[in-house]
Length: 111
Image (cartoon, rainbow, N blue to C red; front, side, top):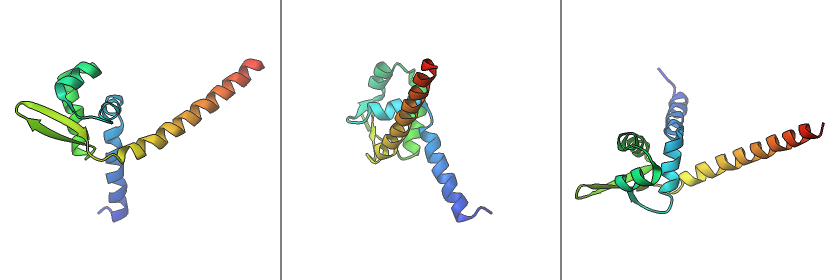
């Protein structure tokens, strides 16, 4: 039987897995300041509807997105803006890593 601590780690890992796809990150960023329909996202993101629907479902199940239906159109939006407090530090870490890599490459170029 898994301990409570192991269960917490599993829940966290599952949540992070829901973010671990470039298209899902692009969807979240696209919906940062607006609500959009599936059709609009298909056009704007250049993703096939079947693939987009799969990604939207994963993000909704993770509690990252919320959806509402208006007649036959489904609209999605970011459920909790705190997700950007998770993504922002990741961007900062990657920016630092890139800067360090560029410094190493510049140094190698001088040798």
